[in-house]
Image (tube, rainbow, N blue to C red):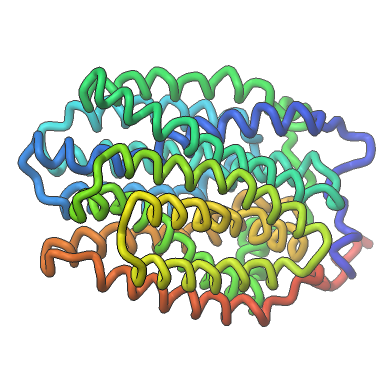
Length: 414
């Protein structure tokens, strides 16, 4: 039977209003993603204060991305079963604890446990997969890609808003107190989560699901298009996290001021507001696989040009603006394709699996950046890897089939 037969939401079940979802979900993503986008600003203050290598800091952030991706699968399962409200509450508390731990960690191990494990767990419960689950269950399919674009754009606005703010906090308060301030800010996600408490989860009944978790997992991983989407998302994670974490140090190594790095990351966030929104809107009107292929190929071209032209504040700002248009614009079409193929009953979990691949890429990008810099004194090799992977991801996404999967009718009792 076509997937349209599976009732994504009972016609009589209550939905949250679209405006309510977009305002509260966007605010949560703004805080969660905005805080983490600025972590690159702490690389040099932390390593210089603690007398650690860049690889030590990069490894903790790499662990964070890996934990975020892996635990996101289980956070998605919980959100699909019990609703996003409880998951976001727990994620907010873990975020605050992790940021305080990041500020006062006295050893590399403790720094990895707080910055890596705690904040990674927190991000799993407060970012896209969880909010997209709410969107999938409450927004009609003909507006879903657009709504996901709004949520992704909020994460980009969070980068534009929070990165300069974090730079000012570090300058005025010092890097440790700046992290404590952010810990209190992360607790603001708790009251916002209350407005995403879906009525049909309040009695513990959960959401109608024709499949069990294991049936949904087996179906997805046997499906070629899901495998291709997952492979492409690895590249997205590699590129954006390498740039986001190591760009400030790369620019400083070439004699540019820290303000250039802050403005660079802010420009990425600002222009990605437009890029992610545009990707969400275009996803309603054209094949999403073509959007993804274009994004990855264009990223490879933009990085290539950036490395060829003379480095100056102006070339950095142009690179940041163009890269910003492509930054998180992969998120709405990727998640919309997953929902389009498999439905929304297990959307948070399946998005979590795809995102885990993204985070493995993030781990490799941020860790390789620190590892190869410490070994070679340069980021050049990692830039070249990012270019090659962009071309590969563009080719991988082209064969994706976006049509709803056809399932055999469930056997009827009697």
